[in-house]
Length: 75
Image (cartoon, rainbow, N blue to C red; front, top):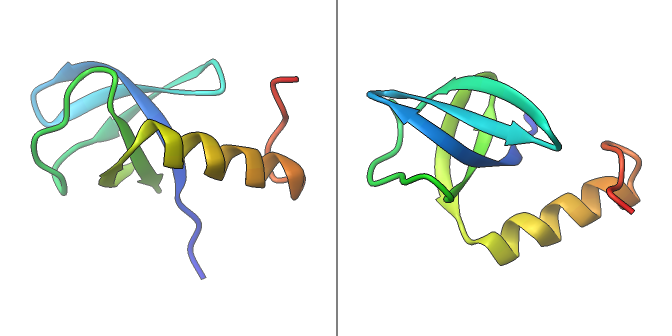
């Protein structure tokens, strides 16, 4: 089983991007997805963006992860 977590793209540098994961900044690869822009949410797995998702889906997923104790809640 693999786990992918939503991350917000905050900067793009060619095929790489910086994303925010609950305030932690991480460098990732965008080699597997197209048409990603700053402000988009991507599903992140082992340093690679797998695909784009809507902000609503990202928020819902992050809330479920927090509820399950997989990540810390913002509240």
